Image 1: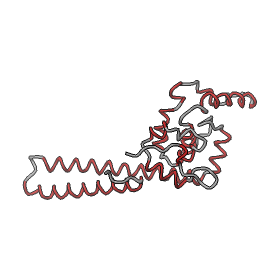
Image 2: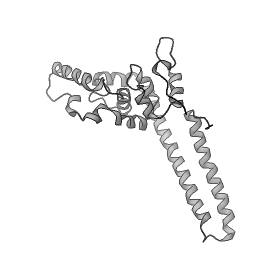
Image 3: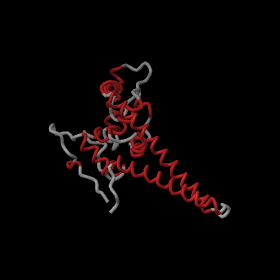
Length: 215
């Protein structure tokens, strides 16, 4: 079983920040999402590099560790009130970031999720609406590519699920006592073909994720 790296073991880039290629490899080889959270990889200064390598469903699952879910704060803390003076809002949102976002173990995932969903109305992951909008504009190409990859992986997951269901359906027919003997060989071949398709999809998914065969 792989063990999670300590924070200082992430591969550095020349300027001292983790290299994106190294982080992508780390995400592929790391323990599941729980370990990324408990290891502090989504709340450090460079947590956004890790969050960018996660798929949207993983980002959403990370929210179960959020301070917001644990404490259920007044949602109004994160939004400017109608008619509220900008100076009052800036002071209030600074308190919100300090009291909630700065201590949240998944703030980087929260910010990345907001960017992928285009949600810039309030404070997300410690980022103000202004900073969210600026990053949305600056990282448009990257975010578009991330959303496209989210859709691709979701489609591939559905294909793997459908392939597994097909194996079960054909196997039930093959094992059924009511199947005439002359159709059993045909059904057996169909099951074999379905198993091959399922295994090919699973193997491709493992390769894309960087997983290796179990020892």
